[in-house]
Image 1 (cartoon, rainbow, N blue to C red):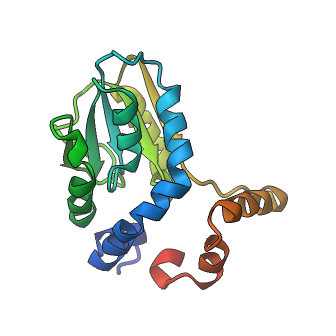
Image 2: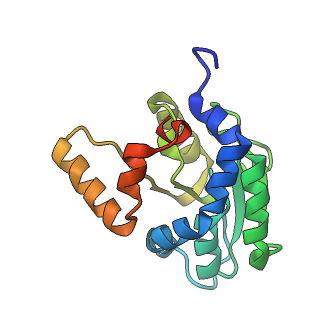
Image 3: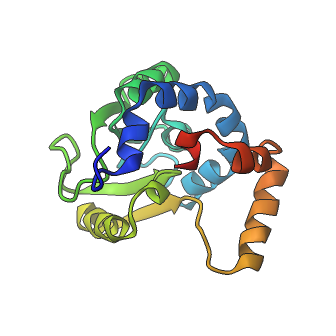
Length: 196
C-alpha cells in the first residue's frame, strides 16, 4: 500500500472484509435498530409523503430499510463502493423491490458523485461510515451533501466519534459494551483490518 493510499479503501474493497461485514449484518441489525428507527422518525415527512433519499455508505441497506419501512411511498438510492456489500444488500433489500437502487460511489473521493444520484434529494443519510474518512474529507463530504439537498432537505448521520476526553471515551465504550458484549474483546483483539 502506498504512503498516500487510504487504508480504508483497501479494507472495504477486500472481499474478505466485506464478506465478514455482511455476515455480521444480523447482529448489527439487532444492536443498531433503535438508532436507525430514530433516524427514520426524525425525518420531517408524513406517512403518506413521497420522497427520495440517498443512503451513503449504505452497505447492506440497514438504515435505508428502516426509512423505507416507516415511509411506504419513499424511494432510496443506496450508495456504496463495495460490490460484495451491494450484492449482499440486494438479498436483504428484496422486500423493497422497485423502491430502491444501488449505485457505486466512493465517499473518499471529493466531487465524485455519480450521475445516478439526483442533483437534489429530500434527505441524505449516513450510518456507520463517515468515521472511516479522513477529517478533511468529512468536511468536504458534509459540504457536498448540503449542496445536494432539496430546499428544506435533511441530513442525518449516525456514527461513532472519538472524543478527546478520556472520561467521555470511557462512557461511550461502557454504553456500547452493554449493547454489544463482544465490543470490548474486539477493541483489544481485533483483526489487523478491524484495527486499521
